[in-house]
Image (cartoon, rainbow, N blue to C red; front, side, top):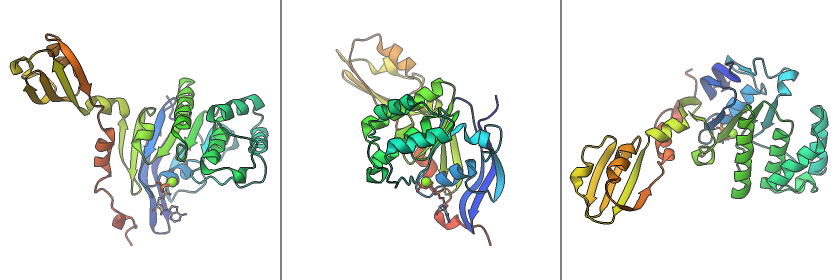
Length: 303
Ligand SMILES: Nc1ncnc2c1ncn2[C@@H]1O[C@H](COP(=O)(O)OP(=O)(O)OP(=O)(O)O)[C@@H](O)[C@H]1O
Ligand SMILES: [Mg+2]
């Protein structure tokens, strides 16, 4: 399978200031890739390099098997920039219709359907739209020509929770049709439920790429069980994956490392009246990648 995005040693310095250092990454067809990092990490720099809006200092990148400056490749990309400047006097509807014509024709009904889903008002002059409502127009133009690759720089910024959910549904539909999404975010929580893989960038360096499902399975989670009568602690001793076990009367608490299967089977011999399982805190796991590595004082290229 050919990669949709293939970056090799991709590096960008703004003068002596590091934007991105030695990024090697492949994004596969049909995946949703979450690109996470704090402010100034290099997310926008990466995205601009992929789109060939800026030129790399070193390294190279192929998008959809070619360079993204090629018109044929550009036409297959949908792009939402991080800093969206929609200041025109024209109505959003006219702006989108214009973009649709430039891109070789987008049915008006498709634009209207997207506007409906995102609850966007297309009759208002763009400069009068609020930040969140501009973001919706940005999303509509990114999705409307059904591109093979969507590159979205902080797509959920400014969207209210309901619209955010609808947007995530749209992203899942893109994947279901075999197309690919790269989206950046500051917050794992905004992308973890849709992303297949997540890459963490910090101070210009990709510090981790993780499969979200595998990570969730590996993660520790706290479990609490309550029975209808006291249970013997021995019944739960030495179960694989069960840690920090505490049995007190009819209550049991422990931490599960990996699958909860052994615990569930041991508990099934008694009458369980209540079960509490906390979702693993992936944010916490990811934050360990954020700590220490590549602090700001090491941002400059050695003189
Ligand atoms: N045009 C520029 N000139 C000089 N330095 C720049 C320029 N653009 C970005 N940088 C620097 O490159 C680094 C990466 O910036 P970038 O905008 O890629 O980060 P980001 O991850 O998108 O951050 P944010 O979450 O704030 O959008 C930062 O240190 C930034 O100051
Ligand atoms: Mg940015």
